[in-house]
Length: 274
Length: 227
Image (cartoon, rainbow over the protein chains, first blue to last red):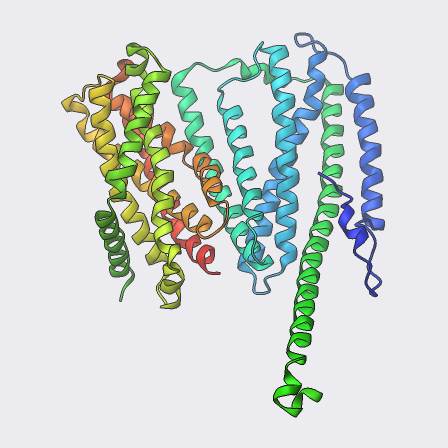
């Protein structure tokens, strides 16, 4: 995912003094804070925090694995809120729709990161990449559901059509996920004993580990906010570009019509002189 | 006209179209049958087939659901019939209910045939004690499938790429039905020593699913097709 969309930079060819890029003072502040927090996370995650008694060094994956999934949940909640606000407010503001879309994109990426990191971690601690455990299965279905949501956003049509369709799907996903989770949990609890997943049984976590996790959450929260700000603006510019492109095409077409109709007209009536 | 009557009319129209075109009997049922046969090729062992037969019946149902949904909305979009219904001021909830009912009837026919195929091909037996559970499971699961299918079918109708979008949206959404219905049918048929009483909690899940998507779908259908 590119945050600094290349398209908007090519946009200000017209006379309007359009803003270049999607950065503002606000995003820069958040971006710099995110970088600092990431450096902090690397220092604590890889350096200061101790290795685990059982899991050794692999426990350091925790500092990416847990914050990304938390932020992904947050992102999908934001998507649902954005969808609801678009659908149920009088002024159907496309801003809400773009916020929902941007948040879903970033949430999906975060879930993907969680799944990949989790699979690697699973290989190291459980010996397998994947367990058909309730939480893993739900997360995988969550990922696929939002990939579907993003596909719906790309169906085409006008911005309003896209917004209406995707906000309905964004809300239905909220209905879907608890059902999926419930069924999967029931399925697994009937089938096998409590799985190896009680690796997170070390709730009596080392203080420094807990602090590193906290740093991770802050770092990824900042990253999320920064990405959403940029992505929402990039989407607004894409929409603008679409409208603008359509307007230009219409104008070109009209001009074409005018020139076509202008030639035969003088032969028919004197009105063509105008 | 009240909504129920419109729903009945829409469902009746769909079923009449199906009855005359025979797509269900000529294409969908054979497709489901072939699926059952190729499952047997892939899982080359009688014991394995016996064990997984309930799941295969529901998998074949889901694949056929995708075909049926596309079919039921192709009928609407080809002649702009869905738009015509909307222009005529028909309540979208009634359209949703009608389409879902039509789909429900077709799916039930399909499931009966698939169950019969499982008895013949995979050596399943249906114990008398499990019949009530089996019928309840089929009805509640099919309600859920029909609701999800109609909802996403209506969404994808009339767009390029709907053939690929429909499975992507539908299959994750119906995962709970696949899980619940498979376990319930296992209980009903006594697969792998399951007992009938195990199945009823799954029927509860299937009913909640059906109600959630029935209500959610009928509310969401209007904004989805209203373009």
